[in-house]
Length: 402
Image 1 (cartoon, rainbow, N blue to C red):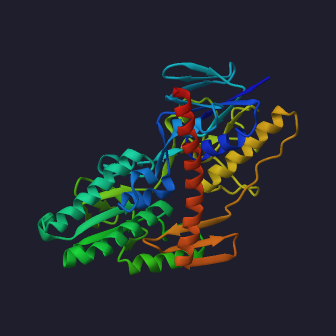
Image 2: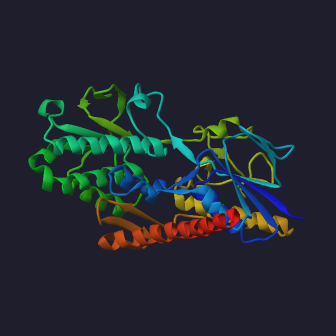
Image 3: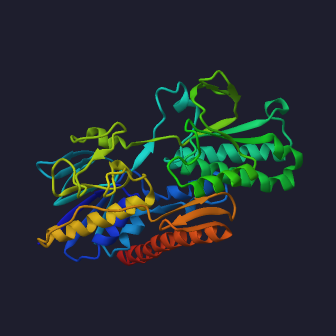
C-alpha cells in the first residue's frame, strides 16, 4: 500500500523533506505552494543590492518536482485549511487526502503594529516581490546619482535598515559595499548616500558570539555603515523616522528585518501557537496531538535538547525537515522514533563583496576571504543540487510532451 504525504510550503524545509522522502518508492508526495518558485531568502542581501540576478535566488518548483520522475506532484495553489479528523488539506481549488502532512509554510516579515507607519513605509525581504521593489528603488537611486540628478536638494540620502539581526546586517553590508564600488564612477556623489542600521537591542546580531559581533561591527564601520543600537522607533512617515528619545532621521527608503511572524495559514490551524503565531509542537515536531501531522522550519517554534529556542534559519529548517522525513519513514515501517534534537552547526555572515565572518562547531572561527569561500561553497552546493533536479525535471517534461 502506498503512503500519501502532503507538504505545504516550498521553502528550505519543505524541499529538504521531499528530497529525503522521495528516496522511497512506496511514498507519493504532493507539494502545495501559493508561489510557483522556491525563493532563496538567504541570498536576498545580494539580490537587493543588485549583485545577484533573479535566476540566482528563485527556482521553478514545477520543474524541480518533475525531477523526481513523476513521484512528486506540484500544486501551484494556496492551502486554506487542514481537517485533522478527516486528514484532508483544502486549497482554493480542491481537497486532498493525506496519510502524513508536513506544514512548512515558513514566515513573513512582522511589521510591528505598535510602530505607526511601518508597514506602509518600509520593505521586507521575506517576500520576493517586496525584495524586488526595494532593489528597483536602490538601483534607481544609483542611476540618478550616476546621472548627477539632485535628490533631496543635495542633502545626504539616508537608506535605513530596521533590525540588526542576520538579514539586516547582510543587507546593510552589501549595499554599503556596492556604494563603495560605485564611488569609482559616482565620485564624491557616492558619499552622499548613507546607510543606517537600526536596532532596539544594545548590540548588533543579538544572541550571537562575541567573535561574530565584534568582527562584524569592525567590517560595517569600515564600510561606513552608521550603527544605531538601543534605538527605539516610535513611528515613521514617508520621509522621517521618529525615535522614542525625540530624535529624528530623514530617510529615502527603508527595509525592515526586525521581526518575523508565521504565515497566514497558521492563524487558521486549530492548535497551540506562540505570540508570533508559530505552531507549538511536541518533542517529535507533531502538532495538534496528531502523530501523522508535523511542522518544520520557521512556521513552528523549535527548541534544542536543553529547551533553548533555536533561531529561524534555513539550517534549522533543513535539520527539522530531515528529522521529520526520517520519522515518517520509521512510522510507516512500524519502528520507534526518537525526539528531535539539533543545534546550530555554524553561522556565516556575508559582509559585502568577498568578505564574511563565520564560526563552525563552536571552535572554528574564520573571517575575510576564507569565510566568504566557505559560505559560498555551502550556498553553491545547495544551489547546484536544486539545479541538477531542475535539469532532470526539464528533460522529463520534454519526454512527457513527445
